[in-house]
Amino acid sequence: MPLHINSLTLSHFRSHLHVSLSPDPRPVVLFGPNGAGKTNLIEGVSLFSPGRGMRRASAQDMTRRPEGLGWKVSGLVQTPEGLQDIAFQSEQGAPRLVKINDKPAPQSRLGELVRLLWLLPSMDRLWIEGAEGRRRFLDRMTLSFFPDHGDVSLTYEKAMRERNRLLKDQVRDPMWYKALEAQMAQSGAAIHSNRVRALKRIASAQDQASTQFPAAELDLIQTEGEMPETEADLRTAFEESRFRDLAAGRTLVGPHRADLYGVFAAKGVPAADSSTGEQKALLISLVLSNARALVEDFGAPPIVLLDEVAAHLDAERRAALYDEICALGAQAWMTGTGPELFRELEERAQYFEVTEAEHGTAISPIRSP
Image (cartoon, rainbow, N blue to C red):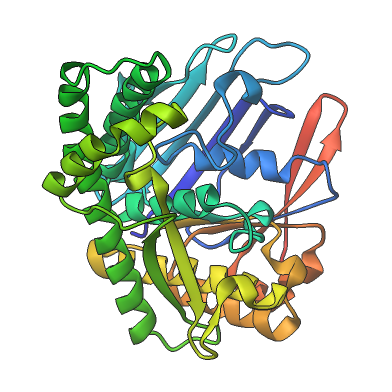
């Protein structure tokens, strides 16, 4: 049985007062007018992956207004380990709690049970904006392969915040830095290793694929200077950079300064210099390659969230995308303003119309367009 959500309930979440649906393993099409709540719904699905969801929102931001009572998202998820009852809840803006089969669970457990990828309209400018977005994209791919990546990243960030506090306070005694830098070096080396291994898996999946979407050559680079990769190199780099970091008031070297560099392989053109359509096609290609690699590694495709993905694709590209999703066997949750955007899927998907209602949102299953 492929990985999929077979029931989903949102209560007081974003624009949704209370909605529920029971999809089967096929792709899920959500269509309706802008503002009806389609993206809010798949944001609820994104919580089944470790982290803060696809919008990186706080628990307070997810609660329905004006009530502000808190919210709950729950679902039954078919996983390689069997059917799991997974629920997320936040009361009046408090940090969300995760329960799996009615027992509290760490977010890292979600990464072991559910592989989940997404592509959003806000990512269309990924190649031409700042490095932070590309790092986040890379780390989402990496997390899909290595569930511990989230934990080592949190360890690194926590130690770096403490080091940055010392730097801002102009603390110069080396003894205050050594333990923090040792922790950062150990976790930073793990972060770099995970990222490199993830890029190798993506490259391998691209090389083996027969697809209408262009391949991307990817490389991990440092925003400035050479990138220290090993634990020993990182420890040395932190020590040697202290005076420069003191002047800046923050840590200027390490995996948090890495960048993802992409090239449109067939043309040898940097992704940042490619056309808008080519940049979008490269992102779709990477998500599909990520999904293929996960099938090879774990025997099941991930759940995929594609928000408004069809709006900027011609009919031929749309058909190619849908064919590849169906060939993977992935439960892809796709949104769009009208059913005509998904006509090429025909009976291979299930369709839900999302409309505004008097007390929130109405979701109605319909037959294929």
